[in-house]
Length: 429
Length: 179
Ligand SMILES: Cc1cc2nc3c(=O)[nH]c(=O)nc-3n(C[C@H](O)[C@H](O)[C@H](O)COP(=O)(O)O)c2cc1C
Image (cartoon, rainbow over all chains, first blue to last red; front, side):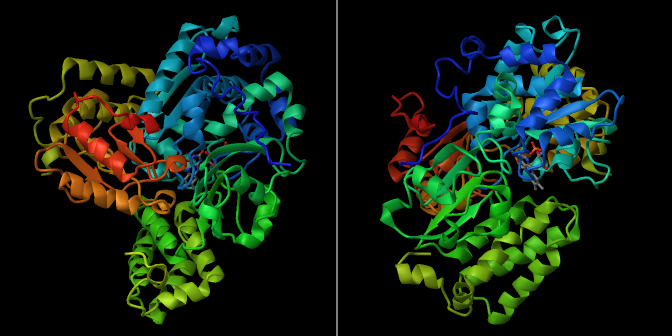
């Protein structure tokens, strides 16, 4: 049987005028918000707990548990929606922002009500300027309909909804850097603990949730948490929007049930490796995550199974690499990215990514010695676990995992005077 | 004394921009939170954020000019010098690199007569390829021109884009259609 998508989160994708309030209402939009207001905060949180929903921003933290960390009776509280999406290989939040913006606005308001937040901020990356303007319009429509602002739908609850545009900094996706950025500072991470739930925005209790996480709430309230959970497995409930890119026939986002679907299924949905070529490697989770090989194709998209295989579902990406790919070159691109995006706050990341990048360029060009390759591995070992935030740690994960899996390929670059993989494929540098 | 701490130069911001900044400032629980929106407003008007604009923003938000400068220089998307009339960003991160981003960049460099990171002599385009992943991996190789994403950038598509930028009034052959 051919693999099929299961559209829960994206059930309204492509329906007429669904990016406008009237179109979204026509397919039942904002009914879940009405229901939520009638249920009250505790019942909403209980439903989210029953759904088993775990954060889609990368760390997969159980959403209801995170909400439960807010200290009782401390106000004001804030909700921040993380729309900073900039993990290499991830573009699912873009789809949700472009195609289903009102679903996000509704999900945001439901969460804000459950948390009794006075303000909800949607922090959207600067590059998504067109999406920000669309969101601005949707938020204005929500205010006009009484879904946001004062005395929302006559419930007596007030909540301001503010779209906040970033300005080009990957680190601002890290939740505490996001908070600093939102406070009008340079976006650099804060020391944890205290966690944002206790001391977040302006020192007040704050929840940071990803776009996809919150976009699931209207469905969960409409159909119940149990119904949502049942789409996946007990350990990995619900569905997830995966981003498949790289050497496949049909790159794009595909929504599938968790746990019951494998990497092979996902690859099949995307039309398989392009040109009938062989799979060499794949990177799940996004640019930060370790590499997997063809031997992992049958691993289910389950949090634990992927962790056991040595990687992570991260932010829901899958970058596919065919037989012609040079893993040293891919590592170099990723290392360059982390070097460029290092915020400069801590030495291991700031200096480590610099040296990593220098050495990766020499290695890819075939100029590095075997000693330099060892130095590269050494630097990575000293960075991992010693950086102030995960940016620096994860700047080593792909390159080190690729080095372990494709050791011969890395070593063949040493002193080769050129990239041996390119040379063999007859490709120009 | 640092340049930004000297007496404010003539205010460069228009009434409409100041209006935008004040509206943003008044929406946040803390006025300082309007730093990024204020810098965006300044850049939308001026095309970049010169020191005088930072001083004006600081005055509106009630913080020091150096604090605004610290913010403006941290974020990659604020220009400190005027860029070309169009800003073209070619994504060369993994998903785009796997599908030919380097060729796209070389093609645009040749077509526009400008090197990566530079501005064309006629001031039409600033070309850049050192930035974050554009989050358009599903349409790799992708680039962004001002606020539009252009996906599946074939050489023909690049040529059409350049043509369109040079002759904005000519009939479009739909380079935006990839988005
Ligand atoms: C360097 C770095 C970048 C991150 N970027 C993002 C991002 O772009 N979007 C996102 O939702 N989470 C990102 N995260 C994760 C957030 O810190 C946070 O865990 C998440 O937004 C929580 O939302 P969730 O519980 O709904 O997943 C990033 C983390 C790190 C360390």
